[in-house]
Image (tube, rainbow, N blue to C red; front, side):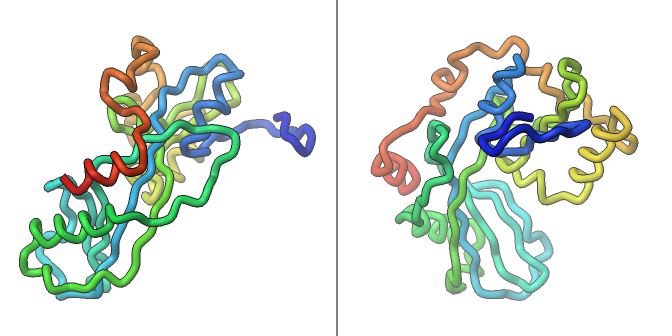
Length: 211
């Protein structure tokens, strides 16, 4: 592997670089369609545990932690274009107010909870919204993992699957054939335009989320 600091020798390379993964594997002849985006999250003060704390709806995704905090994000992403200068500082925006409002609409009994912290970050999303976990055939010592768009990387099983792909050549405990990169073989080059996943101004992104 050639890096700005020299050549690093390894038996197997795992590319799990979030939005940068597409550019890293492209010189190897591997096409990995990704749409980089900026996402924001809020965390509330603790509340009594709910029967069902994990929700995907009302333009939101999130869950209740074991301590009782509600951790939620969502709304239209601020779609971006990746470049070599990443990561850049991108502070929180008024989108957070929209998130808090939609959480209160979705869970009315939690409307009194205070937001105690928030954060923003960069994620990558594939055309079908599912992650990629795949050991590439050519070159044969390359494994690609994309996960941040759906929080897939938080699962301990993900690390186990990556380990299996590297050492065993396949996942030994589950069928992950639907997560291979080959499913995007017929994806057109302009797929982001077709979906409308193209960069907008920061002001436009805030207006969309508040609407």
